[in-house]
Amino acid sequence: MFIRAYLRASTPEQNAERAKASLIQFAEQHGQRIAAFYTENVSGATLHRPELMRLIAESGEGDIVLVEQIDRLARLKQQDWDTLKQKLAAKRLAIVSPELPTSWLALDKKDNTSFTDSILPAVNSMMLDMLAAVARKDYVDRRRRQNQGINKARSEGKYQGRQPDLKRRQHIASLLRTGHSYSEIQDILGCSRHLIASVAKEQRQSDAASAAICTQRTKTGELT
Image (cartoon, rainbow, N blue to C red; front, side, top):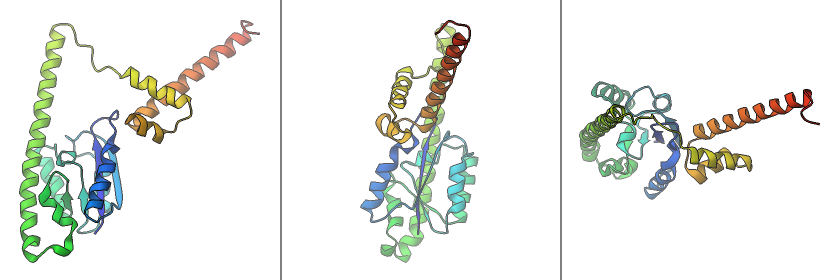
């Protein structure tokens, strides 16, 4: 039995690895170690998730998929959720989450009886379907409220679209200037590597533009 942890955040600006430490601690509390982590920044409403598909492809029969919360897997439409369940069931993969106590028995196979082996999957399947339905409803409700707010702001001429977090980007830029690594910046600010890379790219472009201006001024005699 291998435990494979799946970490997901919805947007590139969010830190998908935020829950990594808590999942490691959870596994240790049950006498287990996590064999591999699969991390991606993608919406929970889509089944197009390369890292999740890689996790399933690399899993052996009976492996465990560990997630912080069920909504890391299941904000899907019913058809997509059914498709994902079929992929997991094809390899008899068990989903375990700290928020789903009935799933914890999968971490301690030696205490399982024929009764728990037969009943537990049925109970977990029912619980997973329920939590998946709640996660989907929460997603749909939240999107509806967001759209209502945007439409109201547009009608009042106040909507400006999503604005970048300039303060955070400035902080990242400062840390990059002082030689901090991507991993160090992630630990300090809890941001994603994608956001750090975006700021670093802006820095390189700005530096290149400044160098080009200096070169041009030197050629034209503006600088000595």
